[in-house]
Image 1 (cartoon, rainbow, N blue to C red):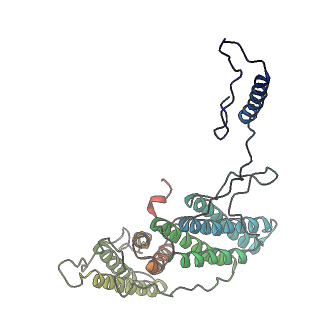
Image 2: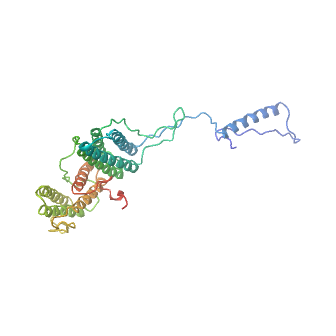
Image 3: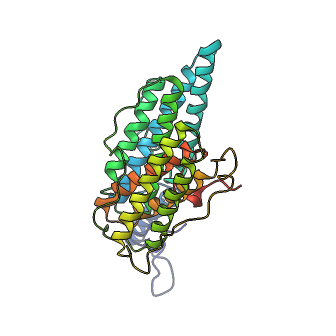
Length: 360
């Protein structure tokens, strides 16, 4: 067995005289005692006994890791809240109560499914591998908060998570993590809206503009060609104008309102990109329409694709603009993804991140 590197080398087992015989006098006895002691130390060292050293400690997380763990904390809290609420739902509801409960259960299960995907994408909980004083492995961190069952409590938790992520975007140092956090936050907010609608719960107020706006000045750090975004916003406006002329009165008002929003955003981005009225201005008189929009009655299922594509553009901009300007891009991501859901898009765990869509 190899001696411990911090220990002195073992003494020789014998001392040889000039005649080649082992020394048997007092010096030989001292050597034998030193030899035996060194052998015991080497044996104990090789068998796992170590000299007294400080216990290992967990490393201090840097700013990026601290922000990641904060996002993970929100996800595990949401997951625990949804799980506790599902377990508390009545199993013997009848009639209208059963339909309400079934809708809530479906919404809560979607929250759980999203939470699992979000936790994996964020890197999961931190496992140190260290033991406590009793030799028991330390739990994964962060641990979920105590959850009080209830659909209203779950709605509140989801909205709180969205609000915290919205505030944290301005300090997140990693652009890719910021983009992921924004997507997770939007998914949580829309799940909160669905759950509240399923059971008549109240959606808490959110510190965000009623209508998302394009910034007044070009955001710092934008390195993407904004011409495609100008064209996409303008094409969406044109599509909603056509839809408004071919749909019911109730949908007509919504379509006209949405058309005006997209046209205004196209104009704003064109000015910021300095292509407004130039040869590089991509806006056209007319655009190709989604399949079925000109049918009678109009098929609106393709409209959400325009909004979904815009959501992806704004999620990308979250990772490109300066940190203090990310919330404006988050608001546009929230707005376009919400509109996509309104016009028939299926909810996803990662709004605006097409690379994370499940394989079809």
